Length: 251
Image (cartoon, rainbow, N blue to C red; front, top):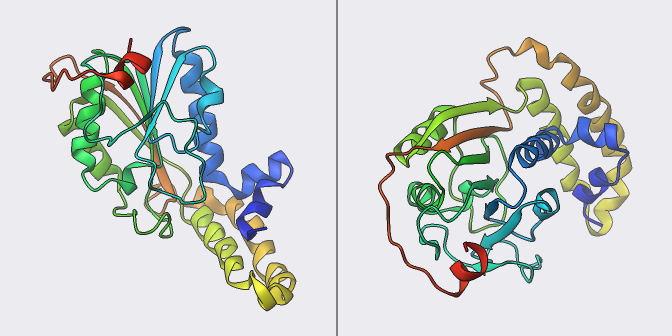
C-alpha cells in the first residue's frame, strides 16, 4: 500500500483533520450538489475516475476527461473522452458544472474555462477547486499552480461572474501537510523499516499544527482554493458542434 493510502483509511474525523483540502472539497461538492435541482444536466469537467459522480445521483451527471492523467486510473466510466478546451457539446447544454483539481493539468486553462462557460446556461453555477501549494502529480501532465487572484482573473476573462474564491487552510495546515508528505520518502522496499520511526517524528506535530491555523488570518499560505462562480449572460456563444457525446450528455 502507498503511504498516502493509509491516510484515507483513518477514522472520519481524523482523516478530515489530516486531509483538510480534500475534506473541504468534499464539503463543497456536497453543498453544491444539494443546490443543483433534480434532473439538471451536470458536467464534471475533468472527471477522472468519476469519484464525484455519487454526489449527483439526483442530477443527469456527465463525466468528461481526456483520460491521460494517471495510467493506474480506470477511465471506463467516463461519458465522453474529450479535450476540455474543445468540448463536444452545444452551447448552454448544462445547468451546472464542477471542475475539481483539474485546471493545473490543462495546458490551455483559459480556453478550457471559456469552453465550460460556453456549454453552461446563462447564470449556471460552476464549482472549481485548484491547488496552490502542492507537489507535482500526474506527471508530466502538471503545468500550473494558482493564486486567488489568478483564478479570479481567469474566471472573469472566461465569462464568469459572481466569483467567490476561498482558501483552504493557512500556513499551519500547509506545514502539517508537508510534514506528512515527508512520509513518502520512507516507503517502498527496505525504507519501510524506517517508516515507523519517521512517523513518530513527523506525525505528532502534523496533528498539532492545524490547531494554530487561526494565526494565519490572511491565508496567503494555503494548500489550495475552492471557487464558486456563475456563467455571465453576455458570454459569447462558441462552436455549436454536437455529436454522439453531446447526444449522450447534453440532451
